[in-house]
Length: 615
Image (cartoon, rainbow, N blue to C red; front, side):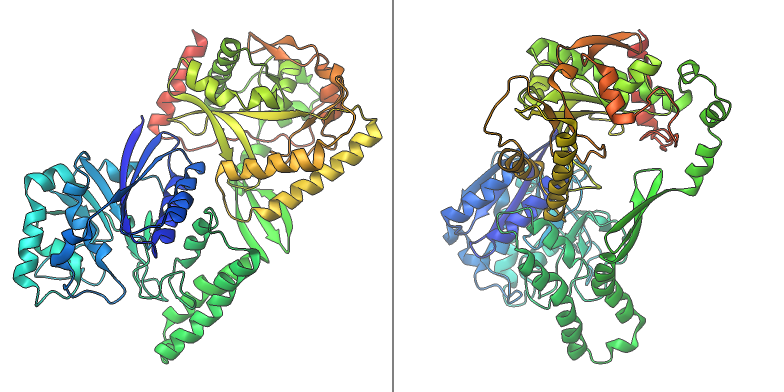
């Protein structure tokens, strides 16, 4: 399902950069089918900065429009008492029903916020006839006189209802009547006028991170983080518990920091923030909360670079120790793997070509993925694009005439020219609106970005598409191996450049520049020269090159009872990758999704796709 989501921010030129970080965080975490429209109430943003904000569309396609206003509309609010660091832009939200006359509903966000999830769920919250929804203000959470007192930095606003209830006029009337007693500006106006008619949302939608300690510990899964302290993340020696996330999303914008600047604002800042807070509260070191804060805001981030243990997919852990990476299987999956029937076949030397296919959920996922492959095949034929089975899928076709029984994903390859057309081809020709193609940046390796054919409602289904480039020169085997070592060194260089997750467009731009400037620079072009895997993916094979005649001309091969495109000489290709590919591997692994705890909806989708294949 496609979600159209309206988001509003208000700022002047001074805060426009921070508004850009908010937008970057939203785009980076949006679902593929979220259609986002940003409405920026313009309090004087210069044209250069507007251009920088518009460039954020490279993270994800969206609409961004700037709404010019007449500040005279807010003359009645200019003398209202509020926090010293707030200005007139904070009152813009009070007139959104008239500033956005064609919009029915909008999410309003302050500029000292980052978003860590898709906003589709929030935007579609049911709030009945109430004009506003928000999260209780952490400082007023137990306010008996107004139990629905919310923090106004994040508001879900039903503008149609606000117009119906004439809230703009009521805000202004209440302000004029109480102007001498108002202490907290627009937030107080909103809460007093809308008392008892605001829908309260879960805390996770406005985690108010406002001190050196985690005052927002009521949720471990913040979806929107609001830096409510006087010192914001961009102030040196600020001490917000979630400060690091601000810099994560800043690095996705035109204002990204150099490595030296990043160190200054993150690592060096942590020491300064501890000292500053101890001066501010000299006895704080006696409280356990101090040591918790030191761990989360200082030690944890620094030690993480030396030693860390984390998940590597569903079935493995990854230990990182001084740059060394060690992967090992989780105990529960190691047990399942050791009980795997395929180890029995291997131990008893049963012909690998005779072993039966997978069963249960593993087989269901295989057959559902097969539907995605069939859709890729259809789209390519409709648009005159070429692809062929690659990697483990090709091995499965040759050895089993289908999936490798203990595998569940699908690998294909395309030459770069066709590869770059496949996303638009899917938009034009796909028969199933839920099946699409798009670039995906790996969650494990931020310098790794390839196109995947995916299903909108079941992210565990996918077909990987690996790009091949025309190297333009025929190499000897020794030259291929030497060049591969060079390519792997370039991959290492890329991985050092992307320490935080960036938009796919930025990753692709750097990869393409590496390919054109550092790889495909041969003076003599041979029409029948070698092909090489692109730097888009960190292949582990010893040789990344393939001779022209191994690929051309393409032929067909049976895979799960269907004919699909195949290299001209699959034996030469597979022998280069696997050695004796007709023998059992040393380790019989598990697929990406075989043991996932699928939701009922995902199970239903997989069952439907599986039945499509069977028909």
